[in-house]
Picture (cartoon, rainbow, N blue to C red):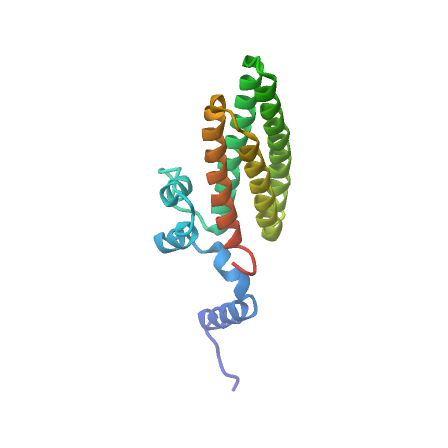
Length: 183
């Protein structure tokens, strides 16, 4: 007589084998807990900003890490596009050629940021989280370059917006790092 296996025992066995074979991907679809949020945000330059951003939709439960990465990309995208609009407005209102030049430098940097965000979105859709992580790091370089270009006191509103974008992309960097094989 052949041994009988219950379907639930067989399913448990298969799931166990899959988790052993694919341990690096098992954590991606797990709902994010407060502990995971702490792990992501605890080394952020602005811990409360990071947590608030990741919990920005109070009507929805915290998604899994993949969903949290998408939330981070979208928040960073909106902030970067808003900052690009601010740069255009500030540049059109100044008569100081040096300040206008600084705004133009930041406009070029933010043009690159917006382009790279689109690449990060495509990578996210393709499940290529390593590329999302790399793109987030590249964006931070352009963000810091804009910050370094601003020397005038009159650029304070752009400095503030640039800092907010920096915080969003640092959050994206930390979330996407948790999805990489080294995360």
